Image 1 (cartoon, helix red, strand yellow):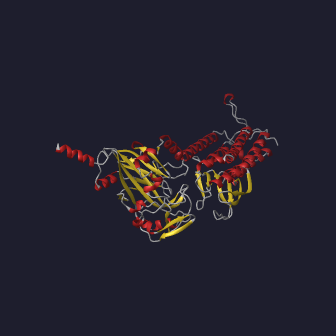
Image 2 (cartoon, rainbow, N blue to C red):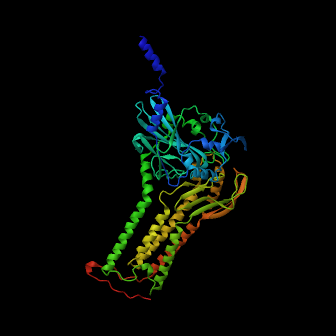
Image 3 (tube, rainbow, N blue to C red):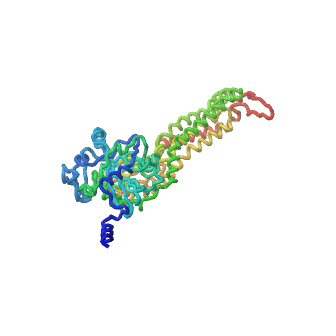
Length: 559
């Protein structure tokens, strides 16, 4: 009976985890066993470090209404206790609009080293390992602010076997089953987006998201490279409710204000690991396949294009060896005898040159000029740009942010548009006027289609509003600007009152130089096609008819 009482009492002392609480040494060993392997883009400038040195470079400030008050200019991590959400750390090395913080980090990278924080949490029979990373600066495509907290975690079952992982991505997270995670033994791989430090499951992920993140595997950090700092939960700085970066730039949704610390990230949800994991979105395997396709598309496309060009060149060479081609080989270069044909070819050649230049220039642009306490631009500043390489880029009209890429074209339109121009040149080898005319006609129409699509997008700009939560500064002003542009999409200029900032701005918009040049290219090719159809003579003899054993003959040109 006594033994049963002792056993019953001891059960009451065991935490809810089925395996019981681990000792600090056991927790550290477990943290080492499942420590992540971080992979970084080649252009990344910042890596995870401890917070100690960073804090010493910060002023502790407090926001009161629109005023920012200095509280402590020599704060340390141990002094970061129960300060309110109105408080924030303002790094004296720089701000959101310059790289002073990044420059310091780069100069002292060897001394600062690499560090991550690990917290062990117990929930029922599960053990949760949270790996927190802190970066001096966040320089993402969609957000730019001082300080950056990110986290990945792995949930272990009662047997301490991994079940799921959850990676932080901006203001959300993504959960994946252990079997779907890339790993080396028990070390799972984390692909960190350049600048934003969002965490992804594959090196080719991120580009299809709103933030247009870029991942890579150019640099790797393992537990051999970084120190693991175990969090007991009693660290005073964990209770700091303020922001780990300047709060003077605005809100944190788009990214001008520094983030809150681990305990308060995403309103405290991330700190509750299992709850966060259960409410995060599931990793979409089909989306991974699509991301892989888009990441390889350009190289696959170029490879196929090269093979097709080589095949066409080989056929031309073979026909020339057989004596089936006569000079000039390219119908596009036939300027002799027939003046109508010469004029057509001249226009087509000019169109080719202009078209190649056009596809790499901006297709559409909206610019704004304003001088107010809320926002000041030096002359006109682009607030929306569409081009063939980056897709659609917008400016949220928030201070310190500037132009950000809202979404990208997974397939660069420039490459797609330049391809038919290449084959137009090759397609004029030893063919009749009628065939060349049809090629000019089809390319002329094709070069006009992007302009039509872009103008269709412009008249639907209101659809972009859903991307910006209502609490983000500048959204109402952006709506007014976009509504003005929608009313006259081809081009325009107007003074527009911005209700949110209470100021009037000059707005001008219209097709960019690339858009206009594509129209010129289209018109020239259509005229060239009409002239070719008018030319009744063929550039070369009629095609060979093998069944009749006919041979190529020179047909005299008619002037």
